[in-house]
Length: 195
Image 1 (cartoon, helix red, strand yellow):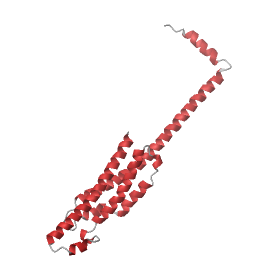
Image 2 (tube, helix red, strand yellow):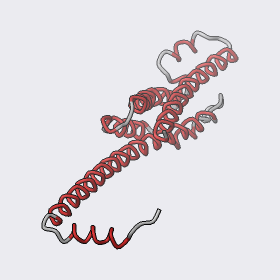
Image 3 (cartoon, helix red, strand yellow):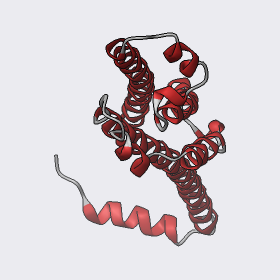
Image 4 (tube, helix red, strand yellow):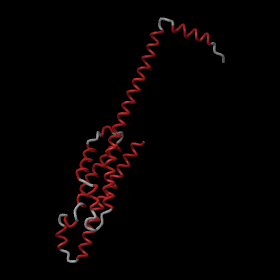
């Protein structure tokens, strides 16, 4: 197929030099400008939404790292008095409460799915439960309410130690359950943000 460039150029030139050409050029230019403006506004809105989601995820990530540190400290607690010293180095009720407040203040309407909302709410709830459970591990089990009366009723030293060891194991398990739940919700949130 052979194109007659001279004829094509002549047709284009006659259209451009006609009286209606400026109106056509202006109309096409307006449509292109409108399309570009819509695309730019949509991309900036999408970018702002992603930034807000990343900010919320950063707070959830901080909560996850905090819970992981608490878990590592709890894993080191044994039956020996004072073995909970590592927990004092990583856990504090005010830090837990601060993370809970930060996550509760996150704008849930900025999240893209119900899975993300449920993950954030799950992290918040289990942080609260983690705080309650970890607080009890900061003290010797014998100082907990009702335990001293139980110990007084036991005559045998071995029985007392076993009883206190069982309490410590139960308290540790409560903390570990909460950190596992936080991990689960965090991974769910992370997975939903990748998709």
